[in-house]
Image 1 (cartoon, helix red, strand yellow):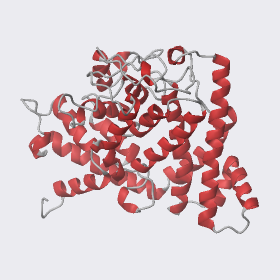
Image 2: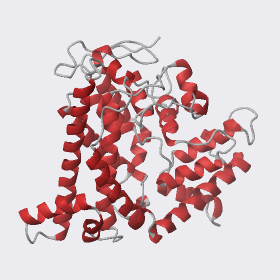
Image 3: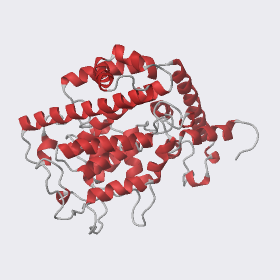
Length: 401
């Protein structure tokens, strides 16, 4: 049975439909309460101290980690998502610690080289259960982190794990059953039911929207910094960006370009948060949920942007897709990353004895599912630079270390 815990005084000032830590469903492995921290504060702290979280500093979404000190990494992105999510959750009177925990953990299962690495690992794992970064996040949080004497993983609360796994909505829905989900999610849900057919709590929904705010706006900054496009080019094709940039121009005529870009992005984030709070408040007022359970039982998302904001986001995403994500320089990096991940996986699956000893599979399973999953875990945990170096060690002549 999961342990119920939480300081009784926590949750004061929260809305009734927020997730109240005093009513947490607890942890899979019972632990004594903390006198100083709520369960959700402890979850947040455990995520920050996890080795997988630290490795996010060497994983990037668009650019390879060594290409520049100023580009976002998965780590800085996660911190930015957490800050945005916490700001929105506070205004909506939700539990900010749970929101922050969901935000900090949301990318922890990503492999090196962003979505390119994920796509290639999924192809490599065809016939072995595939690869999904969301399922890998759950695997890291509940199994792969080895820090505590009595259990594997971080033993996070039910609410944090639910929020991480279901942050984009129900996983079991029409024409998509539990058997269609990645094995890692099926296996965990079998002994700790995460109610995969329901919506997550509002805190997880806020974290998911904060992710959109962070990467949409910070990709503008990174793309300009990389010389892939100019702010004027974004303004010409994304009306929302143009409107905000115009206000900066009025307030600070003649402002130097770097400060102008930073101020524009800062204001854009503010506009996005304001819209999220306004639209979410409108939906909550209409639905009138009286508890977090009402939120889970609701037919749709209660945290969302307005239609106007979705239209503005669509224009920006079209621009970034054409001018950044499909830029020939980015395509070259993606091509290089594909070869690295695929070739490293192929060596290990065909010659599992070349895996580091800590990653050997116990028992007789050459080329089997357990070996493939172990290789996948090893590669998924790599930073960009480590993957490049591991490829060099396996393929380049000369020294092996």
